[in-house]
Amino acid sequence: MRTSHNNAKIGRMRDNYKAWGIDLGDFEQLEDDSKRLGFLLRFAVLAPSSHNSQPWQFLIKDGDIIIKPDFSRALKSSDANNRQLYISLGCALANLLVAAEYYNYQTSFNIEKASSENYQIIIKLKRENSEEKPDKLIKLITERVTNRNKHTKIEEIDSSFIREIAEKYGPNFKLELVEDKPRLLKIADLSIQAGIKAMEDAGFRQELSQYVKNNTTKAYTGMPCFGMGIPTPISYFAPVMIKLLNMNKLSEKSDRNLLENQTQALLIISSKVDDIPNWIITGKIYQEISLGALSRDLFTSPMAGIIQIGNYYQNLQEILQTDFRPQFFCRLGHTEKKVHHSPRLPVEKVLT
Image 1 (cartoon, rainbow, N blue to C red):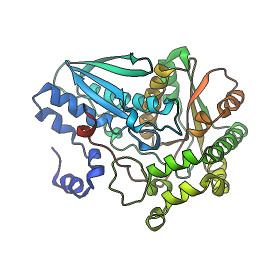
Image 2: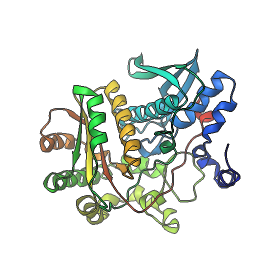
Image 3: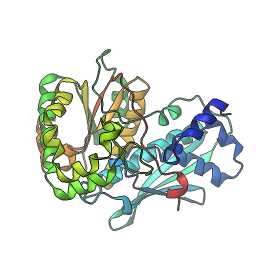
């Protein structure tokens, strides 16, 4: 059961952060199967998403869980083809499967077309017994954060867990961990260019400004400025500055220093086929890597510009010498500076 200390900590949380306060023991207090499945969704909603838009909704039906896109939270400017949206759904799927395994559910899932341009994920679950398994990755779900701080090279990255995940997904996906300086510098330059290009679009800046939040926000979606290292007083002006100025151009020098000199490794996930089902699996792969990395005291921070903007992904393909389509790009490494969680919509707000 939760300790009084944890009760006090959760009680002090703002409502928009309370989704992170999960007591694993609460599951066994639930006698209704539907409520137990709803409990599993508390882990799914902690998945990362582009701009922390959380573009998902869930349905519990006949003992199955269905993950569906919520296009009301789609990013029409920065994610016009919904690639990042479906990658986010894949991250939520990964969290759900980790939680289900912990509580001894057998699971299988299918990615199905619900309409001409709309896919959904149907997860079938069957509980084997009531004995809980060792913690493994489930506690890491509530500890995971996107950490954009500089990397401190404490030790070499043990990439064996990435190789294991790559083998699991076979010949249809490639996972590339770039640590060598020549390629890292080339990719860093592409990422900087893509970021500046993105911010030249007024529509992109307008959309981003709506998701950048001040540090005391009560919003359930979006990115508080503390995650970007911006102090509270300045955080109140940040959305307006982003809307009016190309902040990536103004911060080019510091961004370049971060990528070129303070980044331990870059991770790229590429797929053989560029379609929605593979976007979803990309998200599942990334979240598995993110949790595996955290178990080794490694943190990730995604950067979508090089994937989404123009033809920069083709330049990335040339550097990686692959004809697979890059789908996901992030920094990965050790960092000593900790960051807080971002807000989350509770299950009740996304359960249909």
